[in-house]
Length: 125
Image 1 (cartoon, rainbow, N blue to C red):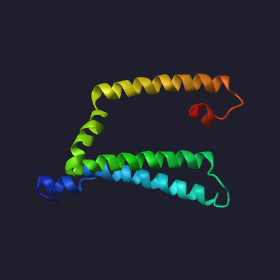
Image 2: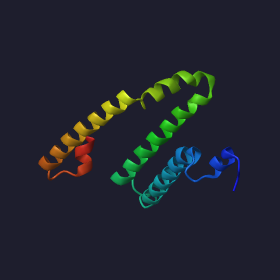
Image 3: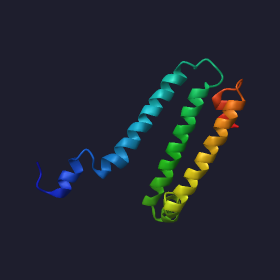
Image 4: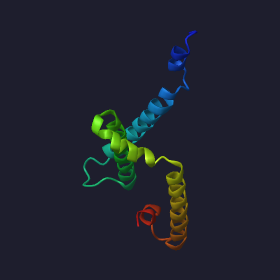
């Protein structure tokens, strides 16, 4: 093993570089692969299936977040990075979690009422 803490930290599987870069990229690769497999079966059709549309929306959100996060590297992007970083703050995270819980409650209530509709229809409306 290495005696230097920096070198040991770089090769440690639980280091920050692995957790912040490798794990999200691996998740994105899995979602992209699922989208490719799902959409390859619908090449002759005019539109994608609902599952493929959901995967496409997740991929677009992940890629846009990644591009926004990469703006911190250029000089004009520091202001964007400050706004992006404020979304991860404590108060904002609490508000988003409360909003998500309220949304989930209403969605579940509407799912119980709209038995003839698909779950995706209820969540989209």
